[in-house]
Structure formats: structure tokens, C-alpha cells
Length: 369
Image (cartoon, rainbow, N blue to C red; front, side):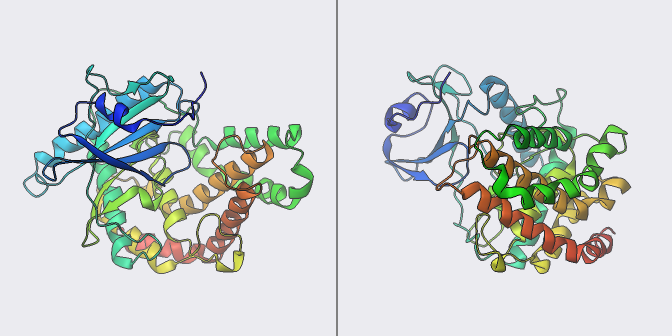
């Protein structure tokens, strides 16, 4: 089934969900590489606004299981927040069911849609992240993992098989190098060698997990810092974009948050002189994160938090280069070398972290008590 890109009749889509109020207008929200996201405004200012998303079912192939995961997680978090006197008024993501009582709607073009109540936020400037925002973001991620530590009902569905399985990612990468479908391999030999030379060290978390030395937890698995919403006072509201919430290791979340928070340049910045490691933001995020998780994390988990920032940068860079070698079939791109620029950017950021790694480990150690 193809992912239709025909013009979207947003008003009709919204009418299929059990919303409160009447449609006024809409505007696209330009975030993310995968789904299409639209803010829907209602006429009456006392009625909530909504966010509708067209789910890319070329990537998330079992939409039913995807939405069951999201419903379980959001319902559990809202229930736990409501039961605590300090957080009972705190809002969290709330799915809106279709008028058929389903968690999604499938339109006539066979596209899948979901709807959330819009979380009002203070439009945080993610290009000017303060140490306070980093601390709040760390707390938000730590709280997210802590709240889900007792989710009932068994494991979540695996929405993207082997999403952070580095062993599989390396196999795919090596296969892409060999097949060279887009005939680009010759021009990126230095980049290919960069990843191959670090592969054994980067498999550390994978091997610890296989040996049973890391607990399986419920993790977000795509914790870009702009997936944390803030209010007008720069207090963290909630974590969004739950497509990849499934079972995993805490390192996936901590590492990816640092990857996107502490890079002084945009992810696709081609001027590598602008790519540096913001140590202050790393330190404040770590402090906030450990404040919420120190009581649940194991010794082995804590010992490898700093390493996880390198790991997730490596994995994402590897995925960018693999997609570049395959002809840009996964990520949205704006120009021919977009994925290559992303790759080189992340490579440079990894090099910057390698310089600071001892200090990173010292920070984690200092906030563990």
C-alpha cells in the first residue's frame, strides 16, 4: 500500500474524530522527518485545538499496534499524574478517538490519521536552549521513564523491528556499501571507514544487553530535544512523538537527547566548524535526568550513560549514511546531499564528544547521589 501524497482535506479528516468544537482553520507544523503534522484550530476559544498527523505507514507498517502502544503509554502516564497531588493538574498527551471508536482514521486514499488534543506550549526557542531548559528536559525524560516503569499489560509492540539494534544496523550498512545502489560509495570511502573503525566499541550496549546485564525498560527511542514541550516559563510540559515508544535500554533515550541538545549546530549544518559539544547543557541535562531516575537505575546503566551519547550519535549518523548510499529512501531530504551533510555533521559531533568523554563520565558520577 502506497503512502498517498495527494492534497489533504483537513476539515474532512478532523470531522472523522470525536472532537469538541467546530473547525476554524489549520496550519502545518514543520517538525520531524517522517509524519505530516497539522495544527487544527477551533472557532470557540474555549474549545481545545487539536493536532492531526498523517502516519507514514511505509515506515510504521502496523498502525493498529502502533496506536495501541501510544494509547497504553499516554493513558498510564495521565492516570499516574492525576493520582499524585503535586501533578494532578499537569496535562499530558491525550488521544482523540475516531467517531467509530478507533484510535485512528483511514481516509479514502488509504492514509492513516490520528488526532491529539493540542498541548499549549510556550513556543520554546530550541536554537537558544538555556541550562535551565536542559535541566528541565532531563527531568522530563527521567520522569517519563520512571512513570512507565510499572506499566501493566506486558511488553509493548515493536513498531519498528530492531530500531536501535546496532548489530542489524551495521549489517544493513555493510550491505548498502556492497550493493551501492545509488553509485555513491566511491565518493564516501572516508566516511565508510570512520564507521567501520568504531564498530566494535560501539556494540558495547548491544553486548551487555544480550548478556542480561542491562534491564529492558519502556523507552521513547526518539528523544530529540524538540520532542520535549515547554511552557511559557520554560518548564517542561511533556514528551511527544511516541511512534517509537517500545521496549529498550535507557541509553537509547539519554544518548539521543544529548545528541540533539548539546550539538551547537543544526543536525544538517554543512559548516563543520560550527559543530561543537556544549558541555554545560550536557551537565545540566544529566543532573535533571538523574534527579528523577537515580532510584530506579542499576549500576551498569549509570556507568554507561555518558557512553550512550556517543552511541546514539554513531547510530544516527550510520543511518543517515546508509540512507544516502541507498538513494535517500527513508528520510525526507531537501537536496541531493542532504543525508551526507547530516552524516558528516554527526561524525564531527562524535569526534567532539570523544575529546570530552572523560569529563562526561565525571559529570555522571558527580550527580549519582
